[in-house]
Length: 530
Image 1: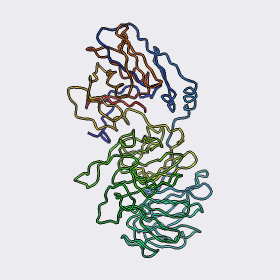
Image 2: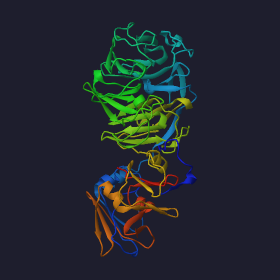
Image 3: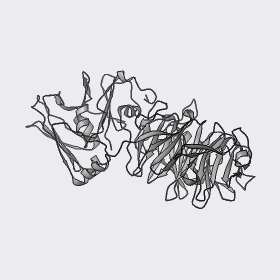
Image 4: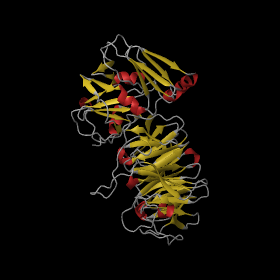
C-alpha cells in the first residue's frame, strides 16, 4: 500500500535518528558465537560519501579517516539549511510566475483573472493587466480581460506571453497592451495562422532564444509551437482523436502525451514537459521524445489515468503525482509535484530528490523538510530563489536553493511516503532505496530497537563482506570506503542465530543511511543516501 497521505500518527511509528550522517554503510554475517567486548568500529569514508551532507556525527567508538578533498566537501556543505518563506500572500489561485522588468515578478492569478506586478524589495503589489472580471478583451492592460489564465513566460525583449486557459488563447503583453498571439477564443485543434489556429485549454508556456513560443496544449494532449508572427504548428504529439491522451515515446510527430502542463528549456535547447496525466517528466531532444523521469504505471480503470505515486532515487524508478510547473537552472530541473505537495528535483546524473514539502497538504513555512504546500503549481527560478505558486493557499512561496549544492529532504516521514509497503506479516519487511529485499534474514525488533541484518543490506548495496571468525569481525569494503564491525556489550552490533545485526540508530551514526520503522506494516525502511 502506498503511504502517501496515509502515514500513521507519530505515536504509531518507531523512528530511529533522522540525521543523515557521515560515511557509507556496514555489512557482515557472523558465523556463530556469543558477544564480544566493547566494539572496535573503524570507518574510512571516500569523498563521494560525505560530499553534500549537512552533518557528520559519529559514535564514540568510531575511528574516521577522511581525505583532504572529503574534508573540503564537508566544510563547504555546512551552509544554512534550505528554508521556505512567504514571498507574497493574499492572492486568488496564483498559478504562473515570471520575470518583469527591474527585477520584479509578474504573478498570474487564475481566481481573479488578472496579472499582478510584485516588487519584493519594496513589498509592493500592483495591478499589471486585467480588471478581475472574467472575459476576453484585448487592448489597454487595465481594460483587458482574461478567463482563468494560468502560466506565463517572458522573452529576452521583456514581452510576456500568457496562457489564457479558459479562453483557449495565448496572449501577448507588451507596451502596456494585450493582444492575442494565437487561438480564436474557441476550444479546438487546428494549426495555421493567427485567427485560424485553435487550442484547447493551454497551460505551460516557454519562449526560445528566437522568440518562438512553445505551449502545452493541455486538453489536445500536444505541444504547440507559435512563431513571433502567430503561426501555430504542432511541435510534438499526435493530433487528438478523442478526449483522452496517451503515452508513446519516440519520434515527436508520433509521440503521445496526457494533459501536458509545465515546460522548460535547458541551455542545450532540450524541452522538458511535465506530462501531468501520465505522472512523468518527458524531454524532447532533436525531434525525439523520451521519458526523463518517472515510471510508466498502470491505468486506473476508474479514472482512466495512470496511477500517480511518490518515490525518489534513480529517475527510472521515481514516481510523481500530477507534476505541473517546471523550472530549469544549472543542470537541475525543478518540478512542482502538485498532488504530492512537494518540490522535487531531477539532477543531471539521473536522480530524483525532494527539496521541500510533506505528504500532507498544508500551508507552513520554515525548514524545507517541515514546510507544507497545497498543490504547488508554478515555478520560477532567479538568483538563488525558487518561487513557487501555491494556488489553494493563495500565496507564492520562495525556497532558497543552490542548484550546484542541493539539500534534499531526508527524514522518516519522507522515507516512508516513498515506498509501497506490503501488509504486515510474520517477518519484518526490509526495504532499501525503494526496493524490498526478500532474500536473506529479516530484521527483528527488541523493545523500541530495530535490528538490521548486515549482510542482507550491504550485499544489496554493493559492498563486499569479509568475516574473520577468530576475532568475530566483519570487514566491509566498497570502492575506497571500508567499515569494520564486531559485536559489543551494548547491543549496538549483535550476533543472533548466527547472523550479524546492527541496531538501526547505530547504523545511522556510522553511515549516511537513514532508517525508519513502520509498526503497523512491520517494515524497516532504509535509504542509503546515494
